[in-house]
Length: 470
Image (cartoon, rainbow, N blue to C red; front, side, top):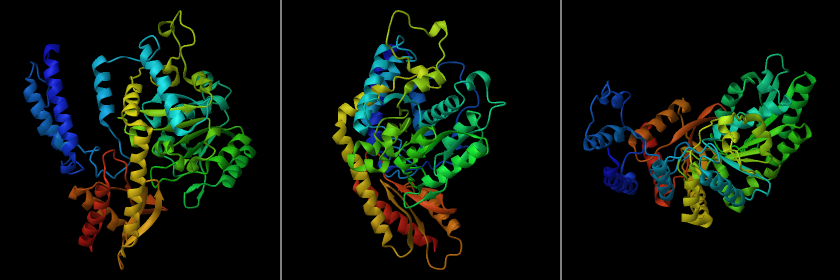
């Protein structure tokens, strides 16, 4: 393709994208293809000569689209939404067109300086105090890895990168079983080791960490000659929205000089609404906080907001500056590649700029508040059904339930069959989790264009299909 042909195709793709978003609700939410179906439709060898773009686009519609699960579907109630609001999509189109590599200030000053400003806009929106600085990571997994690496280096007096871990006293990181598996992976990659991730018991309706049990574990490790290094807390855990008592746990961490990281990947977006901030009261004492605007706030993936009380700790852990990466003749600049694991960086701040300006914070708040309200209404309706058991109450717009008809012998098997039948039906999409070792079905409203009607429709789908399973 020549650039002289691009505008025509760009208009065609834009028209297609608009039509897709306006009609995606008419499609089954989850892909209906069988394993290998798309693979087998693709030629085993690449073409030697150019192919016509008309044919390429037809194949995109005929081969690719049937194998897509529609995350932008208004009845996508599985996992957590990965949104793509229209202004964010336009910003990504522009970023793809100009294709900047934003690893250093000098490689695109606008990208660096907009990232600084957008992260401060988000800081203000969340009610975080002055002094927190932010960086946009690709995902919460990367932010968590960066935090764990900082825990490691800080506990080893900044010698881990130099001397490695052999011969060092084992480091201990504390979290509950409700945290995301990205924490486990960060522990692996950092070299700290799975056996040094200490699981603290939970308590209460929020399924949050027991601060007394945390302190007891720290004391036990100190007595055993181990080195407590860090604490990882969650606000809105992936399974059922588990939320740790932030203030109480951070007080324990401060007492023992632990570096602290709060994973609010999904629920952090809700903190733009002041009425939800009691869920993370005390957050100002955290060292590191992450949330994903690409989940609930409407920004397109990838866009993870990572806030730091003292960025120097992170930079000291990750920065490496060979001569070819130095910017001479400019003082006071930030090179965000020193705040991230990858060197290469995309211009992610542009979509935040477009998104926040296009909706305003109040427009974004309204969407989140509606999702919470509508999910609560569905919860209340399901709770009245004689064969539905509520397993966990709503945390923001997430709750879990179980189909439990009288006399059913194996509820785990029954509920797995129910989830599969619902997703095969195609009108809505749900996923399962385990709560206290038993299968439960999750419901979470968070897709950017969902409506009250979409949410309440889930009641009919769930109960109608459950009735066919006996």
